[in-house]
Image 1: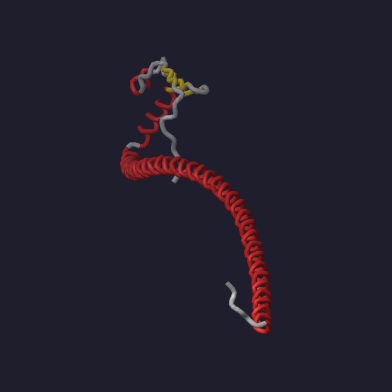
Image 2 (image 1 turned 135 degrees about the horizontal axis):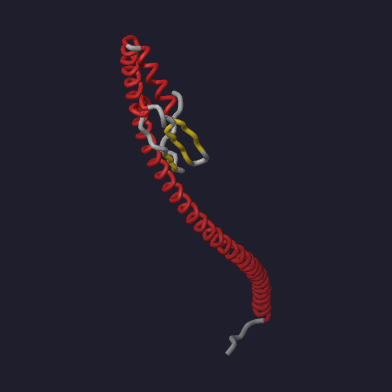
Length: 189
């Protein structure tokens, strides 16, 4: 039941209720506008997020491809390093062998020099003692052997068939030496 109100009080209450209703409608419209802005912002954020996801997926795919390429390149480089290491080891071993050969050659050369000096000094002493007889022996020896060659054969032929003196100094039958391998080479130092 409604209490008895006078007209003036009722009009004031109605006026107050209308004001409150008007304020509520304004607040509702303001709230609806705020909600629409929030919804619009959320839609915009969702679209942006979806686009970012697409970009991220593309970047991930590109990075996976790049990782695969780098792994392949890494494998190739490791193989190349291994090959180069083997080649380096082989060359190092060859260098060590060549150094030993060089040392051996230097030692042999030094021995040859010493032998040559000794032979030269000994020959000088012999030459001063019996020069005419030595020249005669050299002439006999020179006339007793004929040396000829072809591309891979060395021929030694005894030319002293009638000379007994030469035959006694150098008794070489007709000889043929065939070999296609180089045994040694010499060079001037």
